[in-house]
Image 1 (cartoon, rainbow, N blue to C red):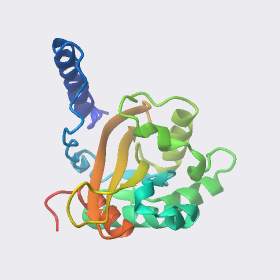
Image 2 (tube, helix red, strand yellow; image 1 turned 30 degrees about the horizontal axis):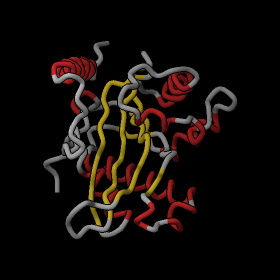
Image 3 (cartoon, rainbow, N blue to C red; image 1 turned 90 degrees about the vertical axis):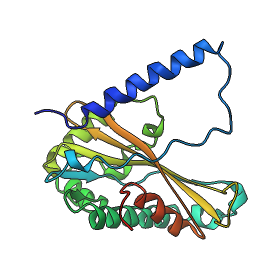
Image 4 (tube, rainbow, N blue to C red; image 1 turned 60 degrees about the horizontal axis):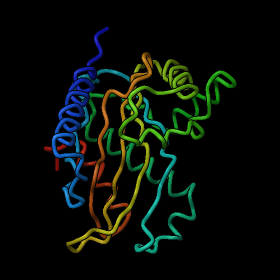
Length: 219
């Protein structure tokens, strides 16, 4: 089967080579710290239509100290569950061409397959937010291949980390930055990645707008 996400991978590799060449030609000067962040890449749903795609639970939420959201971050389980609910609900509503298998269903599947399947909440996916990771290492590679096989699909959408920051300008209280990667579990590779951003007067509005940015063209 042809990997519908493969083209994106090679585009990123080519872009990286060009960027490295530009850096070397400038004598290794440090990049401008004020460069605007890359725009959010839309979900590659055209290559996923009609497929079952697992959405793993979020495992990392952090907030800048200046937001004073200690209480929000302290209740880690409740915060993660609400984030998972927002992400999964919006994916279903905005991209119905894909059958999204959310965290709750993944947990049920894993419980029925103990000890074959790993606990979806203990996969340790947060490190995948690093932009230089292409090949998924074991044991995560094996765990994803096993779990996604039980789901009946090939791909996993992984929210690898959520960070709330204070905006540098404007009236919004916070900016949500959601790192998202798509994994092809059969070959253990990252086929697509982006950082979805959204601003809002509270954490949940900011996250909602960040997830909506993955599907541009919709209200």
